[in-house]
Length: 253
Image (cartoon, rainbow, N blue to C red; front, top):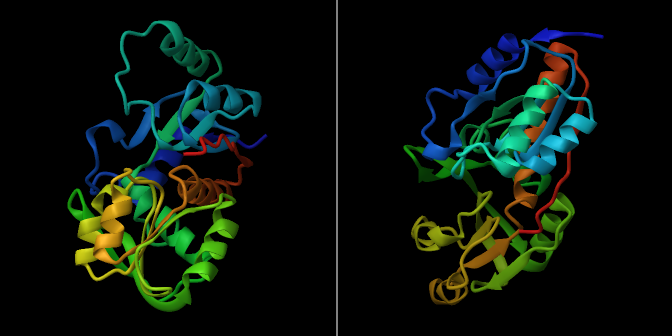
């Protein structure tokens, strides 16, 4: 069985994702979040680091779990109850955790936005939507009906999107920011986008989309962010000649 130093994998991830350069939320804690004994033989990828997905990684006999939403988004102490169970599983099963949030969102090849855009057949993409000091989303000009775009999004994610038909029937300028960017709809409209694809947003964005004349496609926070971790795991598997598996644990949100 092939074994690769954990340090080599972490160094590669940090380099290609520019982990140290990309601003992010404090809870993201991008990079290696949990060590193991030092070598990796099997990689698992999933969207969210949680007790459930750690159990799935253990069952898959992985010793590295690559995630988009890491272990530290919410309060992580005291180490009791389910928190203790999660930590015990990591240690007892020699499972390391590597997390990448905005660095993975904005990566031009492996990123959630780039991969979703490719799955939708969108080309000539330009960066847009600034967050934490860098543009994390993508936009393009493409004439396509709302109905056809909705079908493409459902095929790409496997989840039926929720639509706010606030704009014209024919989309012309499409913006993508995977995850939970719906609350920034006014900023998106100000950038000239008439159709916005993201994961989720607040209830009040329905009325705002109508007022702004913008079509909004809520494809699901989870569903729009399965792309990046799979692309990163596949990249690592190819470079280091390791097996990998995607652990699908959809939230429906």
